[in-house]
Length: 604
Image (tube, rainbow, N blue to C red; front, side, top):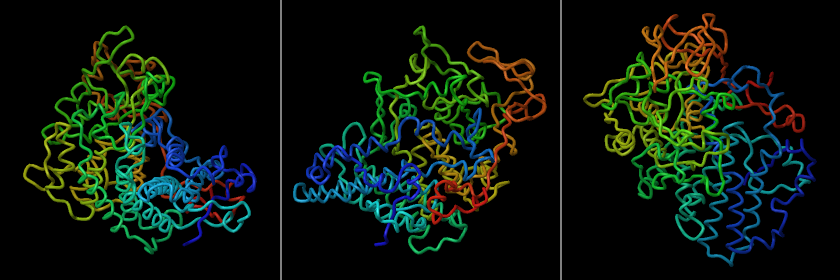
């Protein structure tokens, strides 16, 4: 077995001996503790508590900084001023969870003979799932990283100061872990599969195999080089097509279990106190009664305490009409939601949306232009009840982490990428999602299908790395937007693996985020929504007014046609290919020069 490593840059916070002499669970004797099923269960629960994504990760993740969401301020990473000297994300805490998992795998043989082989293999599968999980998480950020499969002693300087390992080897080891977890994790049993959808089981492992194999397979297909080195893939292990085939297999296998199904009410997945378990494969529960709360609603519905996250015209335009035809773009926001995909009004504030006011009565929720930079307003995760609106940390909606709808999308994309797509698979996947959304499903190439030239231009024109994309793949990309955007970093991951990161910079003519369309009449007279009159002009911004600037300076608004047209929030951003990885912090390289720097960041 190739010797694996633990990170040298952890030495920034403490000496080698200080760190490695710490026992991950230092309140017990590990040689005695890892002896029973209850011990394995307790330690595994600690891994869940330490690493499972929370509400902030899922509702305010990387998707709010992509091409389809405007903000008051973007991340420094996209503003052209970030560099290796500013980076600080390679420290003890970056790698401590990997050591905890390695510690479990090293110590759990103590319980052999005390638990059944089946149960032992289940918990080994749980640990190996977590090792795959954290390794992929780090790989997405840095590319070449480490695969930590043992607890390194403090005096093992060769391991402590070793170079990073190649991404293709890293993911080969991830594949081994995922396949083991899918084969050996149990689907149900005491403390394994509960109504809470918290514990790692066979279904969770299969779901992430579906996701991770698709991610890495398409990443290798659309990137001809390893972004860490700038050199061509060596193809020593799995090829791109082999990984995509694995994504297709595990997606189909999970679908074939019939353990999950689509719920009829799409919005209920994101705002319910108890999420619908028919569709949610893995999720995190919150509770008003238990005071386990989060602040998502407030972060989307605050003038002063949020970044004024805003859907863009490009996002809204992805949604089809209910008859399956393409929607118009130059239309008043008051008419734009008519006869559209139901997911649009479940995600973006539409006329007629009701909320419970502080006085307890139901009212139509009117847009607040101090909450948004585009005129559109997110409501995907927003609880339209009284309490969450009133302040931070009052939301109690439970949060899906991965759900059946994504598995259908993964299966469809993997099948299309492998040229296996059929009408039957389409109907089972994209067709099923569109039927739930009240949209007529029209198979690309069949009678009645009209190709979307705007969608094709969006992914192929004026982008750094255009690809030959079939109508099938374009429609699947549309569906991933309409179904998954704002769930963790689904859109961000899609842009990274499709080699489309520059869409973050490009947006509307490279100047900023494009929002609602103001007709000539509305520019003159304003428009009315829920009894409030909304205007654009040169006066100071307030809840019902945008201040339009003719200069086009950063952080100002303009109208695309001068006196009317699309509202454009100007905010220039930067993208180049080195940004497919983040830099290794200079402080870490100072400790271990053999870490090396990711391609393109050497001089920053």
